[in-house]
Image (tube, rainbow, N blue to C red; front, top):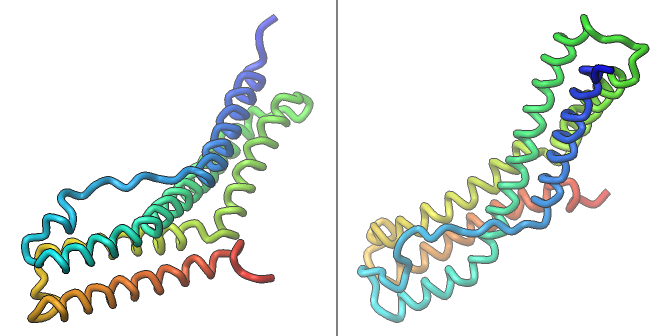
Length: 194
């Protein structure tokens, strides 16, 4: 007896759907590692030792926030990409396979159910958690902070004429970035009071 093509397709589709949800579930708990971007504040040539220590201590305290932003950006990016991929795939597959669909075949029904259910769930979750907007917000915050860090190390004069002013403006700007990012954290539906 030949294996029904719908059975093979349904098995592959179910494995893909399970893999998608498993990958997203693991992403909820995985912390992304930061990639070192070259030498840090300890080797900043434009600053005296006490200023380098203050900058490094600030960066060390900020590290947890950066890991959080990068991890959230990765999670929301995956959710958005999976949502778009499954929605587009479902649209194409339903249109293409409707000609071959046999409502009497249980495997054909299972295939269409898994396809549309997975696509719908991912799209609904992505929209409810505003995956695209949150990805953009967390990625922007992370990028803005690292741009700020590069600027203070490469062009400290852009922050003011002396070290005290430069550090003060740097810390103010880092605080502004953090406050802006906090809005994304607080406006995320799981953190919003009902």
